[in-house]
Length: 256
Length: 349
Ligand code: HEM
Ligand code: FES
Image (spheres, rainbow over the protein chains, first blue to last red):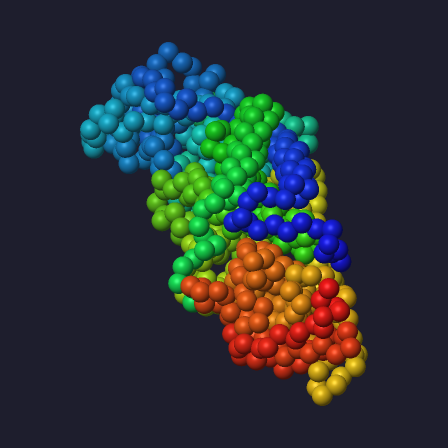
């Protein structure tokens, strides 16, 4: 209990504060100051290290190459062997894919302006829509499809996280995991190519672009699984430097 | 209702309080941003800001929630309580900035309305390991918004004190929601022990302090069997009450503050009309009982604030017999004048 005669009385609107109380308050404030610094350092260093890519935001460049329309928009850069280096995927600004932007441009050689997104060997370009030529609807959309048909397939069973390739490759860090889940589902909804990120115990990791059983885009069907660990089966092919996984979302299993 | 809102006026004390608090908040943000940008260079600026603002808001909320019980346990913490509402508004500002940045970053520029995305972007409400955490933050932010928007004494008077106080107890609901927001969000996403321990330490401290303060209050409310004469209860001896101070006793479930001043004794309710501050822990200055929390004033014989103010608290009949103070537990309506009990000359000396 308080001992009335020993204590000074503080009235907020009637300064100055009584001297002994003032000293006490000063000590408390200094204590809170130290506490604040300790908590800030603890919380700031408590977060785990994340992997992430880079997004050259604010530094758009010009890229020349041949448009690939399917399964997901890409650009086969001039003078680059796609079997060695994956071709950049194309996406639109925000949480939107570039399907509508490149529709009808398949196989066309163009120069566009965009911002590079990069993580490891994988690149992506956020296209400035105005830098694309207006659509030519009769252009053949054979190249990508043809590419997808060739070469051997390997049947696999994999477990990994469904990610949206744009955030994952560097637009956001974290660009995967629980805190990013809603963003990933919004990106897939908007047409950003879905991918599966798999890691083995030794720490090796791979990113696989996801397409449906007939090589069709499946972003819309992957929305609910975004940001979650999924177990799935499918067949892997290497296309344009990318590992492409054909899989049927109907048979995906959640690993909660 | 008050004709003016005196507790809101600015004064040097409040200005100093706000400057110190603002400086500490700024210091927190600078340290957090500096350390995290150095240790985690891979993070984007948006993530750094979202985290720094969130950590700052939540740390501040923990401090705010500790001030109340600390001031109950040790009166010397009262100066921290004095302008606590400004801390609340600062905390809300940080939390709002965090929420807005998060919504812009994670929920905008897509094909869904951002708020819809917050609520249904992750629809797995029934699976604990996957449950969305943002809706908890949004609910907390809504409560904090209502509190910050009504923090002015204008609203205290216009909503009436009981409604206002109930609304502001919402801070505990908001606190619980934020704890869930953090557990289901960052802690599930990162499983970081350091963050978990810090969160646990904060929650434990808030709980412990509230528990200790509640125990002390309960002790105060224990009604001791006392002598009763004519319905009057023997409260204490005159000598137990220091001059210009009070002794607090619980009579028929109500706390009564019995003041001694200038050779007289008066009893009024212990509960300040402003925010339930303990009047019996105040003292009499210039003839008025001054509340220890924010300085509201009441005349000891009428329980009414001096004009132009209009707050009133109940008063009680008092007698002094043979050096003992006797109080009738039946309260008079707020503001009713009661003749103070006079001390005899020998005692007055
Ligand atoms: C619309 C409301 C809100 C949304 C959308 C939201 C969103 C988020 C997101 C996305 C994160 C994860 C950040 C990361 O680590 O990458 C987060 C963390 C956090 N949020 Fe919120 N939040 C909201 C409201 C609040 C409120 C009102 C508070 C109260 C102080 C709060 C406190 C926190 C805390 C303490 C963290 C952990 C910070 C850290 O990572 O160190 N949030 N929130
Ligand atoms: S002055 Fe605010 S509670 Fe008494």
